[in-house]
Length: 409
Image (cartoon, rainbow, N blue to C red; front, side, top):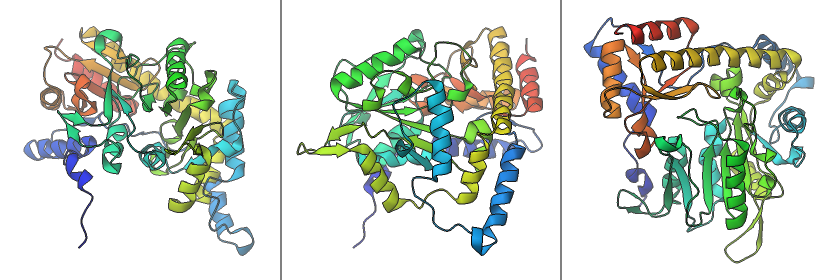
């Protein structure tokens, strides 16, 4: 008799953003005609760059002729895109330890972050920051890597606290971890790590022989000097880190789906019996087994991002969204609410007054201001009392949201 994966029973019934959507629908049903500004889900509003649209049109035309038709492509991505990623995102940034063979094009960061558990061994101690992106913990629960529930947590899923008094920065654990999830610039808090702080984590991983899963989906939003754009800027990181990136938030690919993951060939750990395990070869095997690759048309669109026109378009998008985030940050500061983010990341993380329950403040933000936010507790216990707003909205909606926030001053 077929039985279902019981790990699904260990998760909350709905995903954080699904729950936000459900409560928002209920609010609208009870308040017909009330206009709500959505600043919860981090979806973009700027259109695809014109050079991307043109590149995809040309690719569509190619697909309509037998001599230029493309069927199945390489699961790890076409060389024309992987080589551009290597050159512009790494070599020109001073990273010399990688090759095109280390880069795997995918349908987005979220997919890869969930799928990476396929290469994990058993009985690992897995560290996830709190607050943190829910996919890190949930994917390990679904795969069984988190173990059984224990005292409100999980047997092998270790929370790494990021307290407000420490600027929402994680402190190095006292006991060794085997896998560590880090995201900087951070979602949801908008904080960023200095080179010195990130070096401490790389050194820790080298000492413990741990693997870091480094989510740098927001690196393009870094504006301050001294903030690393890639973990591979840190010496030794190529021996302990996998980096995950996305074109979603920089180039409007949320509805197109394209990103990439870097799994260096220098990542050599071991199997339980002591035999050598190349994570690069394992990830290639995983992808060739379970993934047919990103479509040719999409990859040609991504290729266009590395042209002068594409890079200028990304810069304009980033500047547009960061202006929104900075303006939101300044408005919240003027209300004398605690706030993080909006400097090196497009998210604004804040704690309104009076301090209270995140979901109650979600409801209050809807009722008083007509603004849909994301409750911080959905990102983990350390997020209780906090809310997240996104700078990815339109300029008009962002200005209207600010006017509403300031209306009671």
